[in-house]
Length: 175
Image (cartoon, rainbow, N blue to C red; front, top):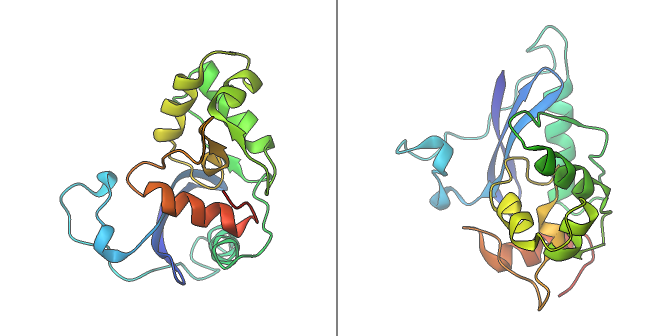
């Protein structure tokens, strides 16, 4: 497994873990003052961003290329991550259907938690869809920021609604 930190200008430091060409974990960029996230426990804030050179894994440039794409996304580029393989181990069958449904929601589109649940085959399971999004370890790749409350924006965990609004603005969605 390879884990790196990278800086997204204007957003902060993010963390990405991969297993070969499969994403296992992606923590959204946060200002350094916002670290550590729960995955780092009581450890001090992360060290400066580190991304391996292209030859760091025997010539495999998956991680540096993916980090460059993530940085471009956070800079406002129209980047699509639908072809990136994700580690969905540990998800329930419903969780896998939610992840799949979320990956079908295109940039610039939003759905409500109830609509997401219906897309995943369980109409009426809006709260379960919300819980899934709250526990999402594959942010951006499984774009829970594209899910809104029936009555407006909704929350976005510890990052808050303004962070979610900012992500949506990257995709030209203004709520």
